[in-house]
Image (tube, each protein chain N blue to C red):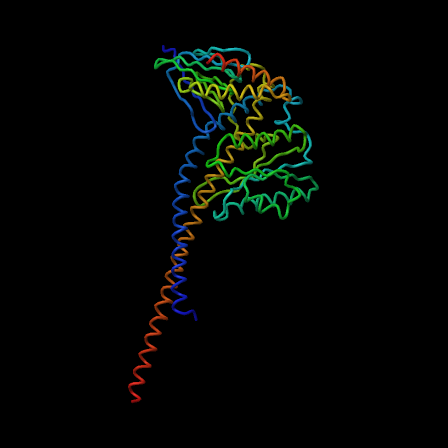
Length: 130
Length: 291
């Protein structure tokens, strides 16, 4: 029996990525990184800024995302996100831009604790990418 | 009767108008294809979002403490209406249809003695509404610079709505847009987004229970604001497809009408030219006879 399942990443504009030979996906869930294998229990969770790792037969891929919801059901993994970038396509300047934006955001006084947490996360992840 | 010269000029002007409408029709047709495509591509996201929310809200144990975006404030005194129109004209009844729908809703609300607040998206709606409801419009957003409907813009509108909801400026929010059915038909729609009207969507919640991480409430309160933006984005996509479709059929009609007009004017022109020739001939013949 194969140990593969299907992943679909959608953003509001289009279906970003569909793959059906995925063996493992690691997502940055809100309460920590979460690895998903075949026959995982049905789960809904949301994501914090981080890196999605997709391990499949046709090669491994990593994506940087800023937010999203993940749903796993019947060996179908759907990830809804409004901002996702393929790390392979991301050059240094793009990373720097995002980092600068995030840092500017975190300099603001009036943001709530929760969004500050998310922004700090974002900065951290972006720094590890560089 | 108009002189031959006048007729000639009119024919020329109608013909050049026809050229313009024809070009606009073709541009609209090309844009329509694109808009339709992106509307289709955007569908999975909103459908999935809807599904998850349905699953979540059915899983919520105590309805009393459900997030306000889902259950409402318990009041229905202040209504916020987001009227979404285009930024450009010359698209047939597209804007007027939305405005008509919105106005009938407005007068219903006012006659019930409730308070009304309006946000207009797109300058055409603002132009048409500010005469009658100028004091009710609290915000006017337009995205003239953006070529296509994009999520970033929708998110901006969504944030405005949520900010206002959180500072409890309204109880119920409805968006008005045109749903794209086909090129000829667009259906003006009113959709309530706050509190979320789950009766609208068909019930396809699965029996299966989900694991939630963190708990349902927290996910929901995170998800619902996103859903608002998603719904607005969906409306924007539908709207842009409808706008192009409506413009296309309007321009098609205009081109046809211009063609008919040119035919009519040409006949008139030929008749009067012939009449002038006949008149001249009669004059010559009767002059020759009299000699």
